[in-house]
Length: 139
Image 1: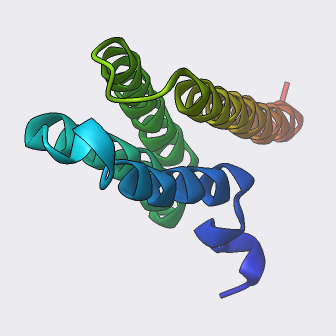
Image 2 (image 1 turned 30 degrees about the vertical axis):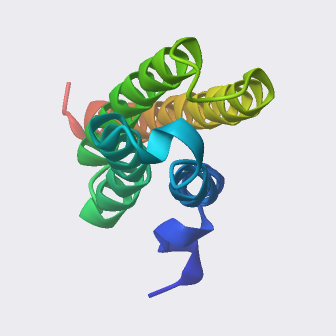
């Protein structure tokens, strides 16, 4: 398979993977290590974002890829909510929270851009098929 089709080449996947690894590191220290429920939910949310990107890309179907990217966005929203709550509970220092939230917002923007790109590509294919069908239809 060409590297072009490899999900690990997607910038949003790379950034989401780095964030997931960072979440594991941050959640092993301080108060987060003691709140097992919050720690696990932060980790699972971060893993869900990166996993949905990978699973969608591997489906090989644009409409499925978009569905998985939307699921990645919803998982990212859940992660962001948990980060906010963790900060408010004093589990995350303000600087760590800002850094993680900024990374997450950039990932969300990348995912949104990828969705727009796929939709444009699908529309171009659809328009081309319709144009060809119009040309093939006898008057």
